Image (cartoon, rainbow, N blue to C red; front, top):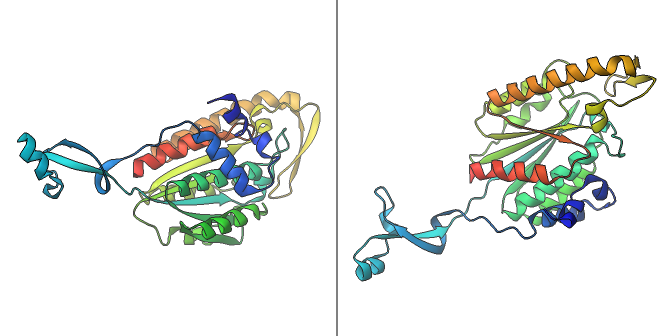
Length: 299
């Protein structure tokens, strides 16, 4: 990617763009700039090219004029409609308000990520839906593909205010209704949980046999733990505090963190859940590539 394209996907630059639709368009158009559109071949819409007949092909696609000229069977191919439904599930719990060294919270990054992926999906003709998980409420915007719906999608996304804990199974139950045949679910969370409630929900979603992409958000200060001195850390969801001597605890913390990250990734992949980790100071092109890769499986 060019330096210019990379600049416009950098979250620190994106934070200066206050209009979410403009931000999404800037990210996606910068990412796609200069790339060729991928076309899937098959029976369906506009004529594209010929190929030799293979046993089992639909005989209605045989081109008899080509047969008359060449004494060989050829199949007419066409560009096909590969539209899918994309559901975005966003963790709206208080831990998503955690702020990184660059001044961005996890929720800020989640907004950039989801807004950009939703815009990218709609450029493919996909229907997009938004589900925000709060402690006592599931905000539900049913998937659609028209422009007015996308405006509502962006508005709802901009209004998310992280608070409380991750919801229980009963509150999240509506996520399992109205599932569609060709569907990709993008789950955006920091995986901060108290009793495996997020992992349990992910495992249930994964068991539905739809494509599931887990976007695990972490801040750079969580990953590196370069704090100095004796500090008081507060749990954003419970309010509990703990005083920590950072120099003494850094090595233990980093070891346990890496063990947990490896275990988490392994357990997700064992359940056929696509796992990708995103740090809140990283450009968004990694997320766009992961999304397109998973979408390709469905189309």
